[in-house]
Length: 197
Image 1 (spheres, rainbow, N blue to C red):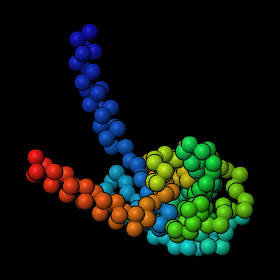
Image 2 (image 1 turned 45 degrees about the vertical axis):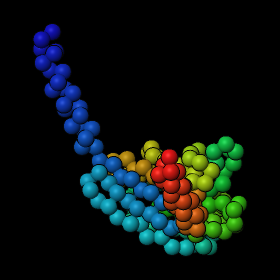
Image 3 (image 1 turned 30 degrees about the vertical axis):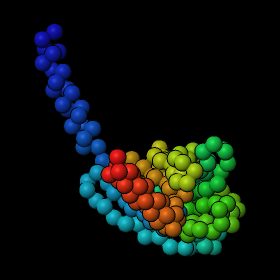
């Protein structure tokens, strides 16, 4: 029994060290063309994006495309993003291994107010596809997706898991400015009331 009590802290320490050294990659992209790639080794970089032809099946001629820096063993396929509450598929994120890219097809329900907004999704989908649920409030939906082997976006040559944060509804800059102005005004009113009392 004493041996077990002595070994328990050592085993817990080894387990904690093993988890602390786990390598992972995080990729964040949004419908406005902003993308970042970070990893637990301390690398931080910006992903370039531009409007390009999608080489995947049924791809449109001009879609927001992120360069994923040619990851080894990227699995092609489509991620269908289901809107919270409604269950409708409004956005499609596509991974193309042929050019190491992530292609973002966003809905145009509120008009064409972002780079990723298209007239529709690709006319054909990859046979390899998965549906995920978006989360967050209506004005800022996003999804967090960590593919497993064989799923779209999985990187077989990565030294650890890759997690994608896919932001599908980014508040417009004018909306953010109005929100900021409103918050400053609210703080001013509260301060005035506090001084008067």
